[in-house]
Length: 240
Ligand SMILES: *Cc1c(COP(=O)(O)O)cnc(C)c1O
Image 1 (cartoon, rainbow, N blue to C red):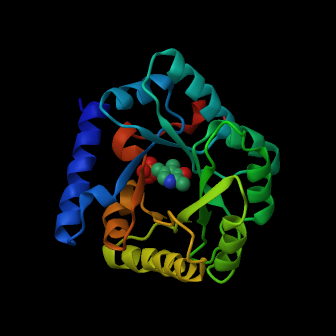
Image 2 (image 1 turned 45 degrees about the horizontal axis):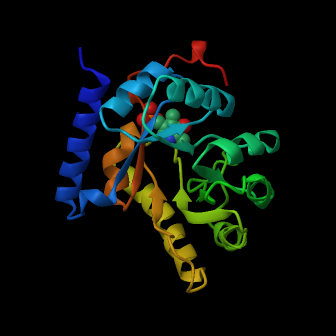
């Protein structure tokens, strides 16, 4: 029976191997452990294995878990919101998370900036881009993303860090690489449009368990891995 610590070690080794194959420095790829639907015990096991960055989709579940994990004596962890953010949840995100990857509307960004508590550093944010066109999916279009990014970059309590994308699953590596390269192109377009003084635009949040390799080949700097670390999810017991 593989433990969470074994899985983290295996994924990290895989990231290192993929980076070697495409001549990238593995230090340039951060592993985000996606702990949605898993309990505080699983987060604690990952934290004890040295994992510090965690991704959560369901905001109330996440805030509860943060408090449980802290009560269990976990080290200081970094929390990333990777799920959709409705207007009525912006305050919880602004008060509890370090990062939000799913900014696709200026209204939500404005609320997060307004609600970010003064004692915390700016909320680190990515623009979510819908690179494969589904109209029901979240994310700004590749065409709209640069203007949104420039507006977000001007908000005082947010720090614009990069681009995030969740393309539909594709069966083969080449197709996965091609779609991730579209997100990379949006990242490059925003980088070229930002004012020269904008520091820290350095994050491409791309790739999950199934398309990790393609994402790293396409330039991902942050892979979001759930199943590969914690195992299969059982949504029945999840509390969105
Ligand atoms: C659930 C989720 C992940 C992790 O997916 P796995 O396939 O379990 O690795 C990554 N990113 C987002 C946005 C998710 O919702």
